[in-house]
Length: 445
Ligand SMILES: Nc1ncnc2c1ncn2[C@@H]1O[C@H](COP(=O)(O)OP(=O)(O)O)[C@@H](O)[C@H]1O
Ligand SMILES: O=C(OP(=O)(O)O)[C@H](O)COP(=O)(O)O
Image (cartoon, rainbow, N blue to C red; front, side, top):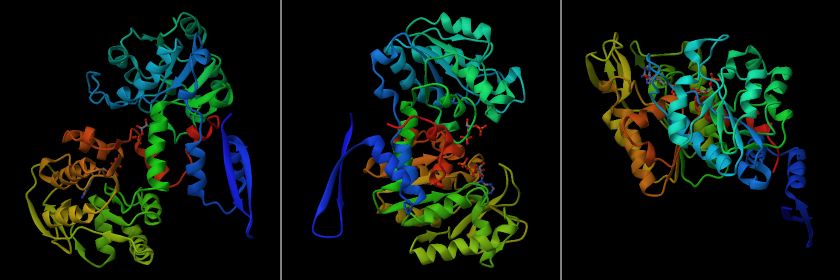
């Protein structure tokens, strides 16, 4: 049994010493009222039981329901255009195969309304088989008699992929009867779908109630270790870079980051709301008119917290939102009418680079500009290169968010970063201090 030694100073010259089980300590920590949400969350998230705790005796011949996030992009011909999420799921699956378990893989793809062939998981079978080195079988459904028969035929170390779990509306509604049907297929549950851990769905949350043990997979653990670790105990100075299109979808994360970071760099489309709030002309740049007061209050909060919040001093503007737009560089405080800001300028890139030089941890979410257009990709690419450079010098660099990750992939620097998150929404919710239902439902260590 895992025992922790707890020393409590009782206010006088003496201390009490207790030896407690980890789960007893967890229960106690959960009951402490003044513990802030983020500490509690970090602790709870970090103390879930892991698939690595299960050995051959627990796994040999056992049917394991593994929720993975295989929600990968496909082109019009159903070719996988980025297999990052499939590769990220491999360590847990291989571990289970290597311990003679019978692996049942479950995932969603897209947001289908009912059975929709274009959202079938069939196009993933070949790549999964290649990566796992076995012939992965595929079921035409995710519950029912036929699926039950296929499960019964899985050999030890074999893998069966179930059809898109979102073909049933009961999945997203987290209906207990549906969760029970999924649970009835297996002997134990592993959740490795970090990208979907912020969803309380039947296959991510409900099933954990009916299948024990319910444990976290290696990817889930790695994501939590980096993201919770970075937020709760970062090496300092700690910087965050937030970009992307909308202030409204990033407010929660900016507010949370202001409680934590030493440096906050803002880029992307959201900066124009901040400039407008300061009375600058922003031309036809993206602005959320109803968020001006909020932008002002975030700037004030940064000041009061002693956070060095840096907005770009210059921007690359365009005469239309298009790859072939005319462009020029202007001070951020003076964008002419009819022009829109689509990237941060060279002075800003330099200033951001200098601000990052002394940091020890950097979190990045959201591109600096419209990186999909080559003409406006320089800011995002420069940040990606800077972070790759910092990683090489021992700085912890963490990238979250679908578009930021795509930007880093585009410049071929993904493997240079300390951690690339497989979850956009999930990593944001975690950084905001929100608990992830898919994690909370798992067994405590
Ligand atoms: N100045 C800008 N004006 C309009 N759109 C922008 C601007 N800068 C970045 N964007 C867009 O923001 C989008 C990404 O935003 P977001 O979804 O918040 O990022 P992430 O997926 O990394 O969290 C990209 O498609 C990018 O083109
Ligand atoms: O792609 C996903 O989320 P993300 O785009 O926020 O990273 C996950 O697979 C969750 O999908 P959902 O947002 O349809 O629940």
